[in-house]
Length: 600
Image 1 (tube, rainbow, N blue to C red):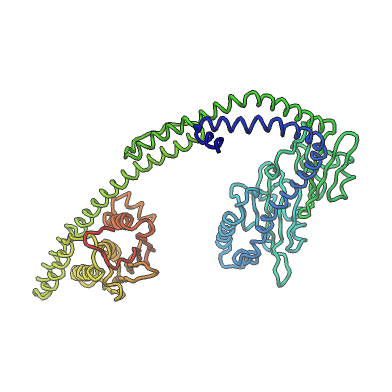
Image 2: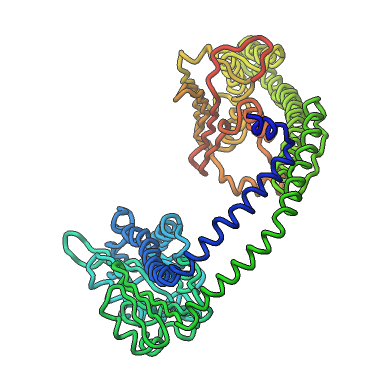
């Protein structure tokens, strides 16, 4: 107990020094000698076994990496749209060129979205046999059409794929001539796409893997300086070698007659006078991995390691005490600095900079500095957002009833008085006064749906007078939502755009439909018209050219107010088509009650 109490009274620095000394010096004498003896005695067989297992692991890694690609090759068979394209006879359809381009884009999208997530796949091609054409490929940059039309279909590997009748085919090394300028050597996974009823080959999919990417599937194989590794395909041609000039060559020409002795074995270890030759075969691809290790280097490497370990341990023994003192001091000093700075933060000083750059404590200090910077930034952002929200609310209240509208309204009332003998003035003035009264309300940013609907009815009634029944308005509002609350002036800019711009110069009577309903816990407001519509891209260009922004303040104001009050998952979406009208859809959360003075 006294020893434990004394240890507990030591400083952190002293404890660390004592721990370092105990865990370095004592194991050096006890473990170092024992392990050195065991290493020398057993390492020879372990190295050979490790080489065999490493060679087998490379083949297993290749099989594991090829399996997902085999699954990818099933996609055209399983995808209904792709399978229908494989059966299509393009010359017989009404618009062959259009149909081909549409299907080419569809197939290209499927390839890019579903088949190229594997880092191994360099390129993909989907070929249709009926029209002898490529209906989908991964790269649009280049394709050798002469090769496609004259040689591609007759290639041995293509015929191999077709002869498999829907089973996968692993193709050994061959030059990629279809989409490569330089006949890059690749290996491929292919699968014929077969009609299940007629058993006819509709075409095939071909997934190409660059041989240079295969190196990523295994770690360093250099057990000695001159250790060599070769990957050989099912036709006994070299897929991988450190020398690129050997890729594609017959393996027997590169490895020698020893290769022929091992060609019938699934896995084995062959030794001759000079080398160990280790071989493993893939059951998936029938490829063979071969490691060649010179005998005179293999065990020299073991002796070198033993000498290196002994020298290193002696050096570490000398430096261990000095290092333990240095490390202990390096750990405790930043901790003391960090403790003092965090006290300042706890006192409310957010402008503190920890300024420790090295070690793990440095990483913690950088994280704390970033956190403090983010807190300061968030405080500033919140302040700016609140200011912007207030400004937008003022703009929303001030800009909705524009001077030209008030002028036109009064002008409409004047002409009604002249043409109708004053019979419509009372109704128009009543609606107009209701609009003005609603606009002037400032006690809250939110109003009931019933109030917003009443405002819109009065507003559209005035516009009906102004345009002499050029359009008609229908309302479809769920009774259940009438007491819900929403932001003021969300619908008026959209109705203004529909009437002023959508119904402008149309030869028929305009129809404006306003719908408000609850759906999946959200309040949906839709303003739809049968006006002239517009193209969104062309409208943006025209706006930049002549400044015709429709109701730019109103539409942009709607989006910004919704984002500021409710977040980015809510908002305004507008769809339109020339000659077929426009649909504006607002999505906001359901608000059943709101406390006085509360702002969402």
